[in-house]
Image 1: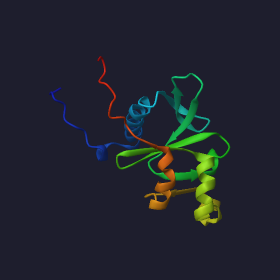
Image 2: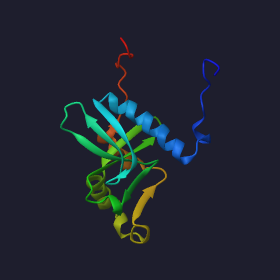
Image 3: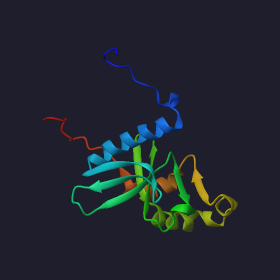
Image 4: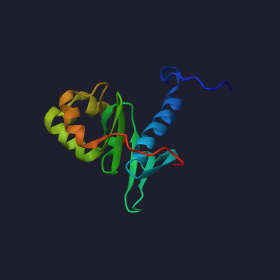
Length: 148
C-alpha cells in the first residue's frame, strides 16, 4: 500500500461502511469524555453500540443515525440517539428530547408519525440545534497524542 495512504471519500462508501466509519469517528470523540465504546453486531435493545464511562457506573445504549430523528420503536428503551451535523456530533436521550421537540413541533400528531412510526429531518432546524446544544460533543483540543 502506498504511503502516505490516500483519503477515502465518505460519499463512495456503502451504507454499512458509512455506519462503521461514523462509529469510529464518534468513538474518538467519546474517548475525550472518558468513554469506551463497544460495537454491537446486532442491535441490542435498539442500540448500535454501548458507551461505557471510565467511572464504571454510566452505560449508555446508543443508536447511530445520519440525522435528527424520533422513533416509536425506541420509546421507553433508554436509548440515546447520536448523529452528525457538519463537524459536530450530538447525542441526546431519545425520550427526553422527543418530548421537548414535540411540544414545539407537535410532530406526534403528524401523518408520518402515525403511519411510519417515526419523524426525522434531513437538516435539523436552527431552533432545534439550539436546544440540542447541551448534548453537542466536541473533540477536546488538549488531548495528548497516543504514547506520550
